Image (tube, rainbow, N blue to C red; front, side):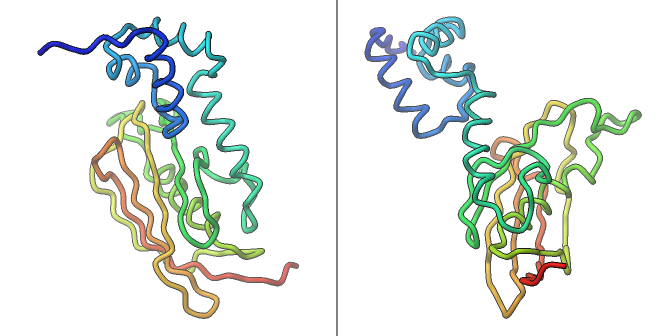
Length: 189
């Protein structure tokens, strides 16, 4: 199959547009999209003043941390990518060797749960939110190096309770599912 070769200026314009729509595309994904080397993508980003993926994620996360009420940004497990308080949120957790069981090399469940729970709590627009009930399911093994994308959504509210569903993916495959009932507490001690 013949691939289209983008002229440099056109490639750079499209690169800017792609990263504006999805700042989390890796250099490898961009390299495949444009059928050029990873080094070409890095040179294009440098020429355009576009930071590397880690810096782009950090910039987006910092802007989102300022919106939080029920939890401090540093308490979220993973990086907060997007949040609309009371509606939905997304975080990313890059797993590593320090998170796995030594024998099986599978990521310990408490890291996966903590990402989902902290994202669910962050989503609640209250001074304090606590987990009242959690119904969770680990669907596939997760290994060091896997990139977990957690998506949380408020399904319903009843009084001071919020029903939040969190689905965690590795690529397009669902790895974890959590259904949380969170209790909002407006008063502070």
